Image 1 (cartoon, rainbow, N blue to C red):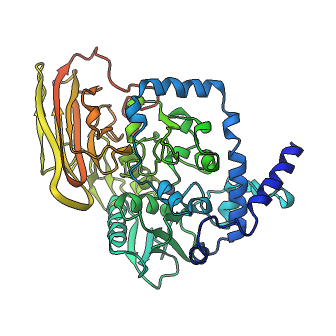
Image 2: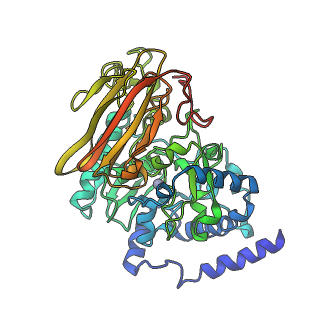
Length: 505
Ligand SMILES: [Zn+2]
């Protein structure tokens, strides 16, 4: 124990030499970053991150043979092509490329001095009991003028694309929660969106002006909803304290310097309100984002969902969790009876916020617009589904919604016949189709976006399956076949890790 501490001391000191401290950042970038830290003590943050990195470096040797065996078993089920998919450009990858990742907590977060004390290992030489305050919630909820309000401003440095992405992200969280976003350049507590090196944010309200960077490579609604998610108090989904129930992480396959990004939060610092780990969460990294040779180090225990990780699309459980976190749902003591996993809309309690694929006052109809309602028969039928317009690129996703219904008590069998024109990326980052095959329609459905996904067969748990075609670029189409099958046919992904029945909502 003593020897380890002694060696660690030297390793940390060696990494902390002044010349090395800022890696490949230029002097101007360092100045800009220090300014964006606000009241966070730059040296304290940096040293604590180095200690965390050195501790996590040895995480691979602590992994049990059982965990490694489980990982290898899961890998056998997932196709090699799926495992070798490219990342679409998630925040962690952008930040590694821009040289900022090593200055941030888990790749893209700035911590306050108080959060550093709670979340990161302290310096043994002057530990005084600061670490003992673990029961304290580490991220503060936003409150201004006695209400749930976030003030924000756009710095002149933001590119037009980043500003559009920021605005789209703000609009999304505003309309999906009771959190009011109000533009202001004078409010005491506010978020300043700016163009820094990469994408990063504080976690929760820090008090005063706090920064949120949407730099080069971060100009999408996926990046902005993710970073605003941090600013509102979210951590990463793959770091949930209970993530080992849902994911197999193989630390030895993660480059040693990035292993600290995959350590878990604790029960006291990470509340999930009893909601499941959604692989399609906007706060979820993909499975090989940090590997220089594309080697997969994270696989889903429900193997059909491997492509869902790293989607950077807000999942309905993200929305539900944010509404619970900010007590929005509690504002509606009476109102609509929401179906199919919908929750009361705190901005109009007689209406509902609906999971993707559902709409209407009580979430019981297919969203209007493109798509169609289909009736499954015992005989196979087919349809071409798709979304988008050739040559048109969008700030936000556009969707077409299909709803397949079979007789009550039966299941549906859906087979992907062909996939045309999709960007084959982890998380279906740019476009794809989503098939909601489990009974819980809040849960992000199985996402597919590669031509080799042709032949995939999915059997639902219920007789109703929403399918969502989504895209930000161009137009893509998929041919699918569908029919009903007996309830005795095994459903896809009925693992213990995903709620098979409706949770208590
Ligand atoms: Zn993040």
